[in-house]
Amino acid sequence: ILLLLTLIVSAKAQQADTVYTLQQCIDLAIKNNLDVKKSSTQLERAKVNSRQARENLLPNLNGNIYESISNGRSQDPTTYNYVTQRITYGQYNLSTNVTLFNGLNLINTIKQNSLLYQAGKMDFQQIKDITTINITALYLQELSSEDQLNQANLQFDASKVNVDRVTALNNAGSITPTDYLNIKGTHDNDALTVVNAKNGVIIAKLNLLEAMNVPFSTTVKFARLTADQMPANYDQGPDQIYSSALSNLAVVKAADLRVKAAEKEVSAAKGKYYPNISLGAGIGTNFSNTNPASFTSQFRNNYSYGPSLQVQIPILNWFQTRNNVAKAKIDLEDAKNASDGTQVQLKQQIAQAYSNMTTAYDRYHVLLQQVETYKESYRVTQAKFESGVVTADIFVLSKQNLDAANINLISARYDYITRIKILDYYQGKLSSFQ
Image 1 (tube, one colour):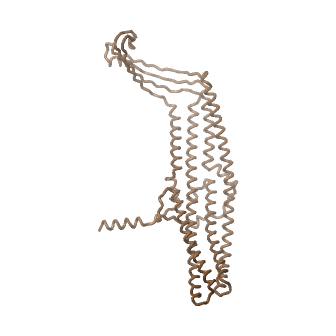
Image 2 (image 1 turned 30 degrees about the vertical axis):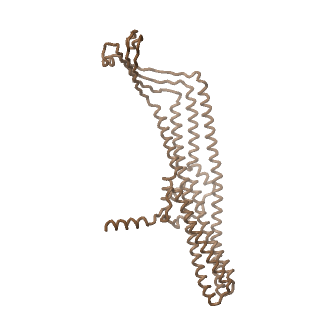
Image 3 (image 1 turned 90 degrees about the vertical axis):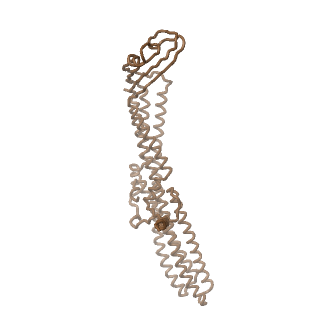
């Protein structure tokens, strides 16, 4: 009995609908998106590079063990006497070295990699922002397809009432066959609209779940947006939006950080013109089988130690430093051009996005008025048709006009919301609708 009850509960749980909110869809897409994962690994690589650049300031510490066997006449490394016998020799060293000065090459390299790491963070945020925008657009498209299906069902139900009425009239001989067939044909057309709308819902759901990298399921549902989430007219112009984008958008910050990193790359390359000063220290000992003393005694008594100071002055190195500086300056110029290009492209994109938004807004309000007009026209035409004043073809045309206007209004409404979200993205306001 317990097993049976468990199976029943499990089956009901599997049949239950899975309802995703917009934020849940965004979170799943960011978690599963391959572009986001790729950007995350690139960010980790930049983090490791930044850490390594800092750790290059630390002293190194290396141990060395050298063992050799010599046959015949050779010099004993411990006594420096020549002997003719087999020599087994061992040398053991421990050394450390730290850079004191190298033209600030290490310091500027640290700053360069730190800036590149910060730019990587902005790249990662940009990928997440783009994913958020794409998911939001697909989410709204799915809701739009559901609303269009609901509208198609309403149209089908309304035409069903008309078909039932004219069927009774046709059976009583109170209506012409042409009027009867026109009304019935309209009902058949509404049935086809429902079929197409159902397919539209499936396609929209498939597109959204694919973008989320979630398997398709007929039990998946999406939460409706509340009325207060439907925006009014946008209150900022393209210049204000562009100004906000320059301050807030991740892609702009990333480009600016790469310019600063390229400047540090030039400074680091110039550091190679200066002497490299390093401080070292070492300790070592050795062992030879020709020495009568034991290994332990030799290891303890043969050791030597001491500090060292090295100054390496660059004089001629195949002009590598000069050419590396030249290449770093080219990288800087590329970074500046990329930053300028980002800003120019951004201004164009915002201007286009703003134009699309205003067009969508105007279209939405024109369709609002059109729906109200066709509603009144349909009401009057229906009354006239039922009174026999107008023929069925006029009534059918009035209904088709109203149905098309309702469908277009739904599409325009969600198109306008999508355009609003794109402008929010440019201003760094994605959290306002998550």
